[in-house]
Image 1: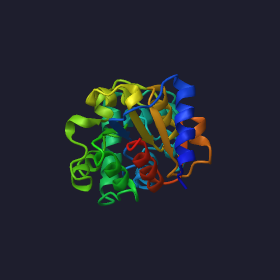
Image 2: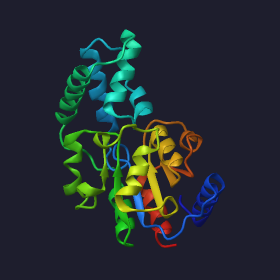
Image 3: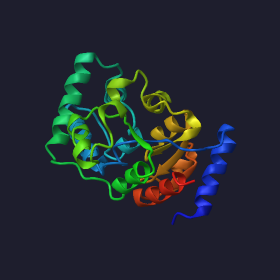
Length: 245
């Protein structure tokens, strides 16, 4: 349950961590997989099948821990572990294309329960939602306009194609701030993965960790979140409090 105490503790942790005070928030930076879409189970299945087809040993659950990395980075980790070498550009293109094909074949993505309310909590108070994802999954990105009613226009999206360093590096979230000209102390981030939380925290924004996947309690706090919630419904409640401060 989200309470005023939840908000106070998150704000206090943010100030202790950064030396800054959140004020007059103008932007919310949202991860995509596991935040806007309940897509991680499908990603996990697609990654595992691609690996099986190419003689790469992998556990389906490990893709939750790798979530937030670019596809190229994930593939390089898998190939290096299996074969003791880094990937070629052609290999990355081929393997990621196959993974994307498998994901797309599973049909329309499922909007994460509570996520639309979370986005509306921002827009209804004049805030700007920004997409910050390590994904380059075209089929999922194309669904955003329909599912989120244009809340994430092309000029407010940071994807795998826009960064030199993916999560956990702070570059993705820093670029998200640049998209709307928001200073760090006037923005909040929402991410569900340890690597994404680490990225947002390092970028200096107030970071809401939402444990929507099979992660142990406390894992997002350990990664640097200023608060850890268990659903996007809770995130919507907290965002509404933040944008009404």
